[in-house]
Image 1 (cartoon, rainbow, N blue to C red):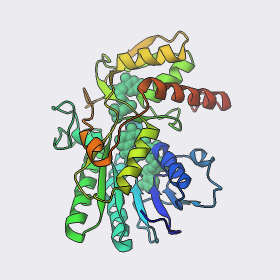
Image 2: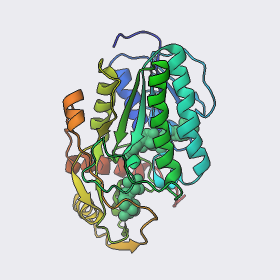
Image 3: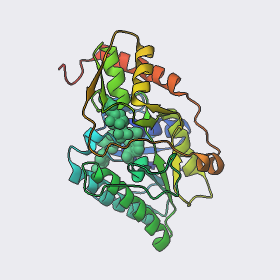
Image 4: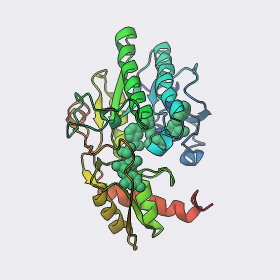
Length: 323
Ligand code: NAD
Ligand code: UDP
């Protein structure tokens, strides 16, 4: 892609994944405009590059239209943790649907490519394993997760309709569970919960029997895939799964975290949240073939890096629950 001083837009750029994407784009010479309403993101995530001459932050909610000159759009704005996206489900749906519409209109007006951060949740509680992109999913349309799952599914529909109707260059990736530095201490996701609890010598909370599985991708690997997808001249095309197929039960993950952190944390069992998917693992053949992409960071190495990050954060400031 040709570099210009016209910025690339990263919505949700103050969030966990978005901040790493902004940083990587700056590092390769791009001008970056980060738009975020700071609902689940934080300016703390931007401190390393906030004053960079090729970076700008603008506080804005993407459910409202934006009129700007941009050279590409990465649409990441949306809370991703179940705890976060269920706090205001109507706003989550508006972010997914109205936000996508606003960003697609911007892409159309600027005649630039737009990438959608979709999710493995479009497969719901999958009846096929591992999940291939051609699988249509098994999603409850009226449950507590539906604002996110159905919102993201509707956003995908909009992306493909904008391509068919207006020729907008749309790209859709389906992100599987991703983890790493800059996750929030209290975001409720399993990796942050387990590591933070282990670092505090508190019990790790297993929801249900802990036999449900997830496949965990380190954030640097994901950011490489996001950029590769935007760079790929042959996209538009079918959605692409973005994840690391290393699959763990939550009990196995808890054991690995306890081994990496040390200490004496026990396990405690809590109720399984409604509609919690029983298993999840991406088939990544498309990412391999179309984007020449492979995950490079093992779950063990990635968790060790994430442990080091949370150790620093906990040493720096008291967590929300403690303050
Ligand atoms: P995050 O909550 O850390 O980041 C989301 C960012 O979007 C936050 O900075 C938040 O303030 C911002 N935001 C939310 N609603 C907004 C709105 N209406 N207008 C402007 N900004 C808004 O989550 P994340 O883990 O970094 O996820 C980023 C994207 O990747 C999301 O779209 C999410 O659905 C997708 N995704 C993430 C994962 C994962 O495991 N992390 C998995 C699948 C998909
Ligand atoms: N989970 C858990 N303990 C926790 C947090 C989550 O056992 O403290 C489980 C949760 O029920 C789910 C899995 O871990 O089965 C992943 O949860 P997360 O919220 O990280 O992501 P998602 O459900 O969106 O995949």
